[in-house]
Image 1 (cartoon, rainbow, N blue to C red):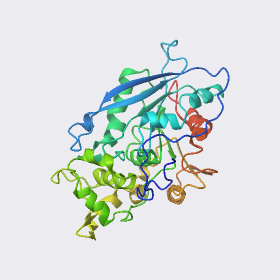
Image 2: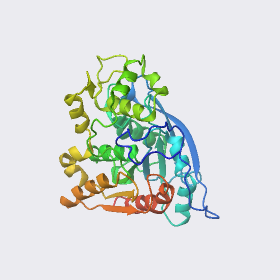
Image 3: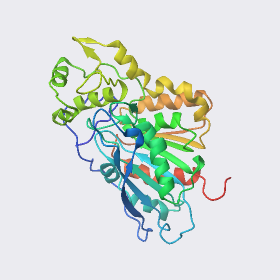
Image 4: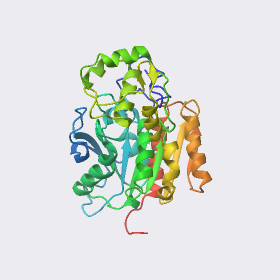
Length: 352
């Protein structure tokens, strides 16, 4: 089953989605140079003591370029790639057919890079890559802890001009949020079908859902809830945490059958279209910014709005609406657009 194009609402699907989407992929190129995929565990100091109980030790997939094992003196640019809601790094690399699409791109002339895929799945199926006492500070985990670990353990070019950040769907939200706030860490930015760019309202927060939440004894109980109801919990855990409200340690946007405007205001404050104007100076620092979205993807309008905002400030960025929905062309885009984009815009070798 295909994940909804409207991931930012977390409420338009009724069936649970747990596994990766079966997507088409470009044909393998004969003779493409082979990469090496490593699975490591990275401890996130920023994730310690999360009230929700999610582990601070995160699985990370690292794709090393073909020459890494034989050219011991060479250092490489790094691309950090963030997965979407309801899946982890393993499932997303399956959806985009890694490492095949990366190897194909190398065969077509892309420069060699290290690709890093961190797992940011949580008790409610997604961290939103946000900073929360309930889920942990995933924003800092990605921008500080993970980058520091990769730089310390791999032969990277450890400067912002040689680091790229990309994400799809919830990962696109994470890349936009982290990218705006941490241009001191990353030098090129790519958003694939980013979700949650605009403020989320009450849609899908029903009295029935509130009854289900009230019956929960721990965050782990969300595993039995419908996909949309888990999405609401993920949003609340990320954007309206409450250390004094066990067992879920979050505030929901409804109480006594009425909307809680204070909670909705917190959610709105975490929407990139709400805060992008505060980070224009940061966005100007990027060597390149790109966004894309399918013409049948419900996230198209918000992605176009973000593009228009950057245009209004004179910030160079590319924006593509391609033929496709939320997931069916992602592997092709990764090979044909994403890898070449970072190949072109990340610095390698001497400082330019």
